[in-house]
Length: 190
Image 1 (cartoon, rainbow, N blue to C red):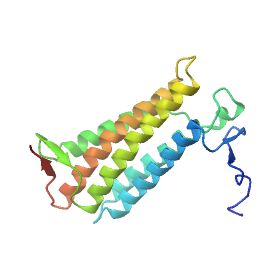
Image 2 (cartoon, rainbow, N blue to C red):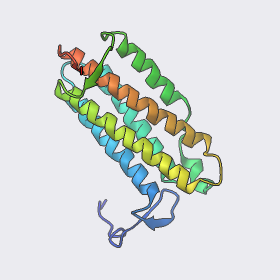
Image 3 (cartoon, rainbow, N blue to C red):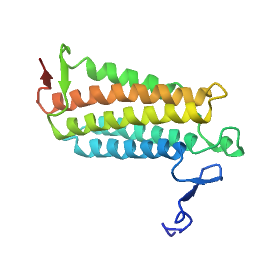
Image 4 (tube, rainbow, N blue to C red):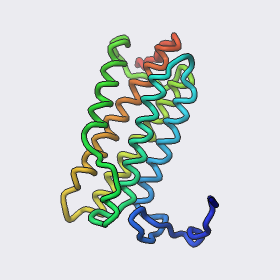
């Protein structure tokens, strides 16, 4: 299978639902940011040291959920292609909440702002968190621009909650990665 097709050479691409669109539209910006976030999470997972298979497996599940969200963003609502997508429910966000609580229970109480840093895995988790926040803003912007005449679908609402929760997860993951490596968070104190 060839990787290159040449069909995007003129600045157009195809949505999952088949429409040809400019590569500069907000929809593509939104799922492009999802793709960047997915890559960042893969990078975080690759830097987690020691036998942490459960944690890296958890991150791979997050990556799969991001791909699922990307398919939804790349599909025109109401198109026939929607039937081929996996539902995006509240379960991914709820799963993240459970993971946040699990990791947070092992960490010292947070009394100050944390400066990004520490172990490489923690620093990258902080970077992933900032990419996640940007992604969330971009998806909101797409929803406000493209769906301004109607209420966002429950799927889009679930994706937005998932992204919001994912940024919280990545913050706690950064602290947890420092904890696993015996490093203290760098606290910001004025």
